[in-house]
Length: 476
Image (cartoon, rainbow, N blue to C red; front, side):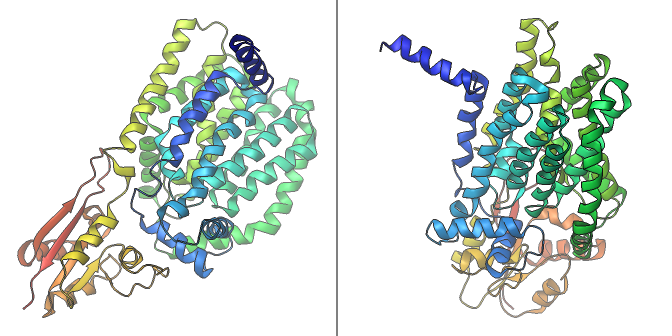
């Protein structure tokens, strides 16, 4: 067989599988999920994954993801380190790319989904959670599987299949509870079809099944979700207007302004062209966002709780690409304006932004290499210090080598101020904004007047202060 005929055969096989050049590009970019898995420092929530996975204290939700990470680490040799802890989230983040393409094909078509999958692969937000020992990408991947089943059932007016798909989306909450919010948003989005008489009869059976299934799910899982939310509130998560503002600002930051503008364009295009499927995607985005906005008044929320909605947002942003009236040059320009900045952000994430997380590992290593034997060490995210300084240590809520210096225990730095022993402080200045004003001002004055700045570990990133500082107080 000649080289040309072999290439034609490969192209024909890929075409039969529905794999086009955009999806191939997306998969190639997606391989970056596995680059530098062990390079970036852990942060405290990842350390909590270790504690809950190895000590079994993660509660009803999250626990499936913790157990899965534990199993993968054991299968990779049992060494609890960044690379092994993050491998499963990275794999889920990679699998989300082709799954997203497949899931939305019934409503969006291959042209839109090729570009949407490329945007998903190029997103630094996706890269961040793919390289995090948390359950967000696993939640996203399971939700995408359910979305694919749900949309195919919806198109065929198959009530049981629609319900099964929505149930799979809801089950993603066992990796992180925000999956349940997405399931509610999808159920609410079905109302778009009920408004139009042409779709009402077709959608009647799926709606009945979803309503019945939703009632059962509320009875079975409602108390568990409520308990999980109450537990979250008891951890000091303050809701209210500040929480809502933080949700909006953090989502805009991670989504990026370009994609945000694309959402407006896509939504308006779906409305004014009367495309019901596009309006449905818009309704899911708005409905899920509204549900989380409502929850923000009861507890602190952030962009990560909309992470499972990100693929829906990207589908909406590329919706105008399905228009036959859009000139080819305009179409290419539209794609370039969204994709090129995303690729640039991805490059920055992997270089100067250092994985977009504080350099805790380097900071605690610096202190440990410069301290004397009996020096006292106090730090923010103290459990991370023990994680790095005591191999095999997993109970980061109860550190032994490093003392807490956070907003809940300001008495520790006051006690250290009277200590005869030399003391080291690992400080993330951005966290001080969360302290009570009196405690914050007193700590800052103490660091400025009685301590010496020994080292800084900056992260060059606009919009977020991830820097760490090391202070030393000589002994008396």
